[in-house]
Amino acid sequence: MRMLEQNPVAATHVGEHRWDDRLADHRPEAIDQRRKEMADALSEFEAMETDDFGLDADIDHTVMVKLLASFVRQHERI
Image (cartoon, rainbow, N blue to C red):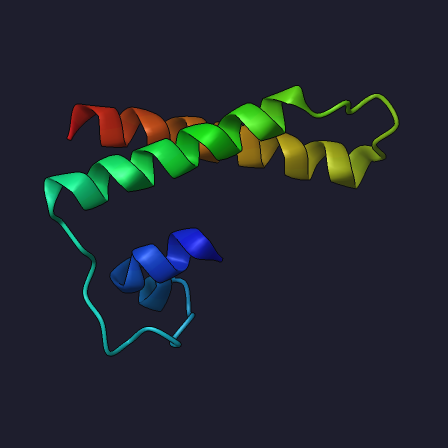
């Protein structure tokens, strides 16, 4: 949810309209903070013990790891 709040335009694109009155903060320090939060979340997901996950949870976990890794790479390029 935090990612959508920080990226209100993207949130609108996926149908979340709570932040329609905002634009994203594109100051360098805000971008760096988002990158740090996503990198921290990625580390937490990667550290999870997934051996007892069912198929659905395993798929969700994999999707989240891939999405967060992609977001971190994207922010590092910025």
